Length: 286
Image 1 (cartoon, helix red, strand yellow):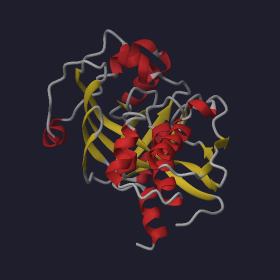
Image 2 (cartoon, one colour):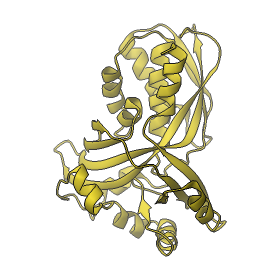
Image 3 (cartoon, one colour):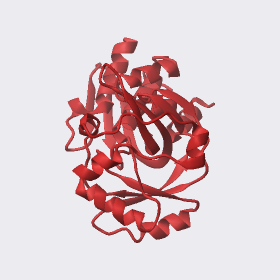
Image 4 (cartoon, rainbow, N blue to C red):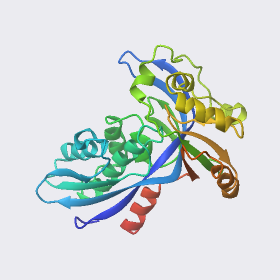
């Protein structure tokens, strides 16, 4: 790929099918086990290369300043790591709600890293981009790697997995939840025992953050209670979105049609592979 005009690139969301907090490190970061499921709900990034070296975000979330946007921070991190003299304009069109536990900001950052690595001809290997993504946020590496994955550590130790085909109904209670506040909460469980992927499929798992989020966000608690009356209800990440799974799109659509109007809802298909990686491969002619 060569530097040129605007290009549009997907940034997929994720669900945490479970989330166990297994410990806390001396540096304050938490040790986790989780299973990331990529889904086909996406943001879109419009990226164009600049010759003046500047990195700008002319379009993005109104309530998120460009300097605080992980997309901008990712571009600057790659620029510093590669030494390129080029810049970029980054337009971020959001469909993934902020503070929802769907990983939208992290996915946007990963898309910026992967696409600019190509457009700027930086030639960083995927492993180098994963490591760079880890400096930006715990969820960035899974989107850089580009597949649903079993994750451990702080989220950086990833094992790609192929998951059963599922359709998900996702409810957004129209509130945001602060990940930092949840993980700083004194009542958060931090000693869940380690499990295996096989054990998860045999007996399931839970989200250790759910009790904290329920106590701090009545809107999320209400959504979980409503969903649990009709299907198994789960919190993704630290919230605020809750979800349930179905084997067919028709089943998912039927339930989505019953979600109260005061909440947002999505029907999304589970993905084993990121649509961004598929598009990059096609663009390269691979």
